[in-house]
Every structure is written in structure tokens, then in C-alpha cells.
Length: 375
Ligand code: ADP
Ligand code: MG
Image 1: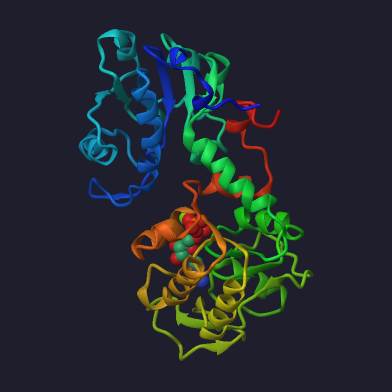
Image 2: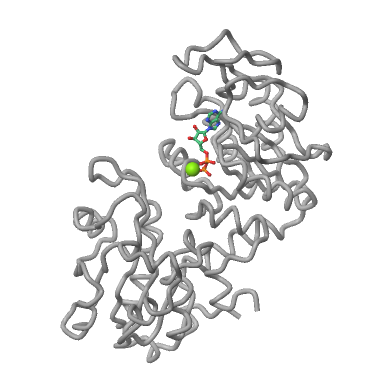
């Protein structure tokens, strides 16, 4: 059984030193954070622990940079809190003199983190009373600050972990009748297993984005220079899987559209399928409108280019406007939802990308397993 921090008594947190695994792995450009959803999702747990008098050291990673230093002022604003910043693990030895809330620099600076090294976990946990994992989006990783550390300290789930498990379990467990899975995007190897798991858990599975190209190939359609993963085999025997019936084709080099939307056809070399067409959008939107539950991950097309973003925007709005319960997730998908300013119209927005897909696949997440979630 997983134990969450809100099950701890006040005296189990007051003046206790808490090692908190947070998640600040957000996109940024030229030192500016572009998307703060994941950071904000940490706030509730931080506030809860501090409010009960715990002394908290936050541990996090950002994959794209070495040090957090230049992001610290922005993190303070987003979290609405002052906190101390320490660059080296050794400084944790002076825990007594440090303030109530501290951030340790990028945990992945130490190569032992990703190796789930026991010695590193020991060094990390020195001087702490408890460990709390609140980084759902890294819980599919067997890393020292997610996994090995739980052998060194009493380990608990944070409030975000609790919400993610509740939200995503609902996606899996609610009745198949009226449940629609909408999948798009590019990483087909991570998405096919989700489709497989939902074959008998959903009423319909709508497939768009580059992952549809794999299905087109099985139908014998030449997808030209479209984005496609040749190592993944797909199964479309089930009539539950609804594929796009029209597509937008564009020049791979110039992104110029070939001509208007066309029905499914062979695509010439040098051209690629850039988006699903208006008939498909209409069909998908109608299905979404009549749903009881919609789970959506992945853009319908090459949405970074405005002219190939329309289908995705229409689908996003259809999910947001429908009466259905809605669960959405994925880095690119959430960024799009944020841009459209409709985040609050979804029943649950997951902070997980890979972790969410693993959860929806039905796989055990190592970071949740060590907290006792599967026992
Ligand atoms: P998420 O992060 O929401 O899980 P993915 O990372 O799987 O989504 O996929 C998002 C990416 O997929 C975007 O960069 C988008 O441009 C790309 N994409 C979707 N459809 C196509 C397509 N038809 N051709 C090229 N890229 C596509
Ligand atoms: Mg992505």
C-alpha cells in the first residue's frame, strides 16, 4: 500500500527534514521558462509540507541544461516562495543552518542518479527523516532520487502522485461504454501499447498524427516521406480503431501544401502527411461529442506549423466543450491546451508524458512500485 503525506500525523512532519523529489523539467528558450504547468503542480505539496512545519529540500532535474542557477528567480516567482539554492550535495551537511525550503541543483549533474546508484542514494538521504516522491513524470524511471532512495528513508507519495494515480486510474477503470481514446503525436513506440491496453477498455480509439501513418502502411498505402516508425508493428483488426479518412499532404522541404485535403492515397517521395483532413476532424468531433469519457494524448498533425494545427485545435476544443469527463496529457498536448487557454475545461490534466503513457499501458512504474503502490 502506498502511503501519502496527508495520512501522516502533524507531529510526524513538524520540524522533520523532508527530502522531496519534485519535477521542474519544463521547456525553456534563452533561459526563459515557456511552460510552468509542471512546476505549479508541485506547489500544493510544497505548501502542505511547509505549512505543517517540515523542513523541505527539493530535488529535481531538467534534462536540457546543466545547472538550475539562472532559472531560480523564475522558479521562486512560479512557486510563490522564497527558497535557498545549493549547488552541491555536500552543502546538505549544513542542513541545520539552511532555511525551511531549499532547492538542490540539477540532480542529473551526478551520473550516478540515472544509474540508480545505492551509494548516491545514501549520500542524498543523509540527515533526512523522510522521503516524499511528488515527481509523477519521472516515476517511470529507475533513478536514484526516485527509486534507490526509498531503501534509505521511510518513503511516501506526495499530493500530486495521489492525484495522478486517481485521475489516470479513472481513465482505465471507468466503463468501456462511451469511453473514447484519442491518440496522436509522434512517439508511436510509446503509444501502440496504450492502444493495445484500451482495445477492451474503450468503445472507440481515434488515431491521428504521425502514429496514424503506421496504420496507413498496414492498409497498403505508401506514406512517402511521412514521419513513420518502421520498427513498430500495428494491429487494426479491431473495428474500434477509427483512422482518418482524409489527409493534408505537404512538401517535406518547404511545407507547401500539395493541394486541398485529399482522401487517403499514396504519397509521393518528398511529400508527407502533415495533418488529418476536415472530414476526419468532423467525424472525430462527433464521436467526442457523444462520449462519456475522453482520454486524449498527442496532436493530430504537425502542429508547430500553424496551417497544420487546425485539426488539433478543433479536437482540443471538442474535448473541452463536450459534456464528457476528460483526461488529457503529454508534453506537447498540454502545451497546446495551455496556448488555447482551455486548461480548466478538462476534468484532469496529467503532468506525465512517458510516465502517463506507461501508466495507461498498464505497466508497473518503478517509482510507484517502490512506494508500495502495487502491493
Ligand atoms: P505528446 O508530447 O503530447 O505526448 P508527442 O511527443 O508524441 O506528443 O508528439 C508531438 C509531436 O508530434 C509534435 O512535434 C507534432 O508536430 C508531431 N506530429 C504529429 N503529427 C505529425 C505528422 N503528421 N507529421 C509530423 N509530425 C507530427
Ligand atoms: Mg512530446
